[in-house]
Length: 262
Image (cartoon, rainbow, N blue to C red; front, top):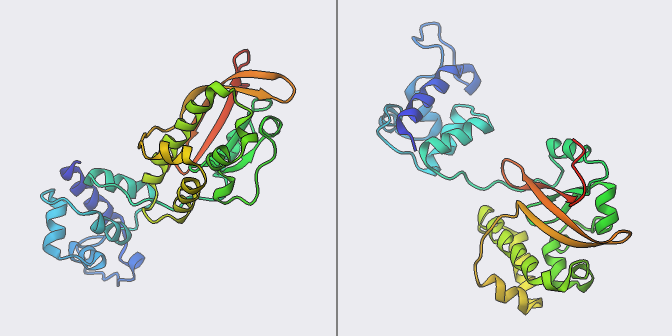
């Protein structure tokens, strides 16, 4: 939290907004080229005195105030994130994107023979290269919560069979710890999370037991031993790159005797 910088940032953005941008007349007699304090306050539905305190750095805005301020000042996504950070507030969760982000798609195309795929934060595969398809099979359809690898792990023995039995417990714990982190990042009433957790709790006592332990950890880097259809049991170094909002992740497997081709 940096309220002094927040005040300076608000003023700098206020100076950049033309009255015409927000539907106000651009009177030639105006003393400022941007918006006045009272105009920003009216657009954000707060008092002028309160807005003045914000620019002076003597008040901390609530999360409910930040959103209308950002709208009034026509902030882009990066500027909004910056405003929340300066105010020491958490930005409300955003709805996950169901199509692959362009940057993720570009990276995915560069992995060649290294198995790579893009998933949502609930482990639903959105896209994969041919090497990943060779290792894991086709992308499950439909792409709802039942396509989540976490769901399939606990209800489908064939999915677990690709792992060594002695690794099953570690994989289960890692999946659940990651799911709990993703669930907390989403809206508390997120339907996909609720359906996934409710269904698994009902169908898998194993899941229910581990879920109640409340372990939390995002999967970023680990070693996996998987059965490859042609190569047999292979040890992979598994890496995950998360998008800025953590709603998507690019995952790739590098066999212990291989290198990433870029």
